[in-house]
Length: 168
Image 1 (cartoon, rainbow, N blue to C red):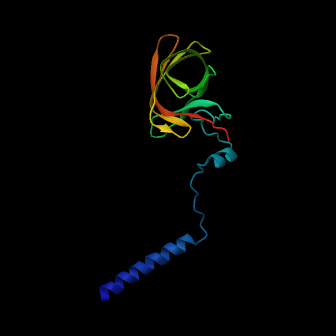
Image 2 (image 1 turned 90 degrees about the horizontal axis):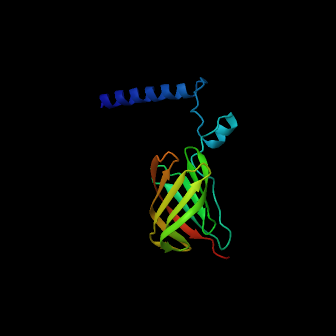
Image 3 (image 1 turned 90 degrees about the vertical axis):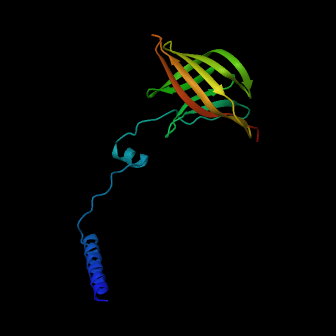
């Protein structure tokens, strides 16, 4: 019984000492600010990690693709039948013009789409349609092969959706 009361006494003393430290008026350093709002107010800019949010008007369809990583980034967007797309690559948006279509049709899209950027970089998009959704279809597997003017190739695995904005 005496050992229990000694342990209780030691525990109580330690707890009292911790409470005294916590309320002693000694400033405790704050954790660094990590929220976007905190960074913006401090003058530090968080690095952008993908395309800005995109929207579709009623009746429009589009493809939205994200990188297949632990922290996915929104990197590809194209409105069906527009002949244009946006691709986020190396910290900037590439504006693409469609140069070819092929493969199979699903929804308002083709499984093979080719584009060219303003600097001559070629982009080959390959889509694998998945299960149908209300107003669209999953794209569980997709890839972009970026072919630079010097013929250097870069492959990026993607996933996303092809969707249409229904009438209200």
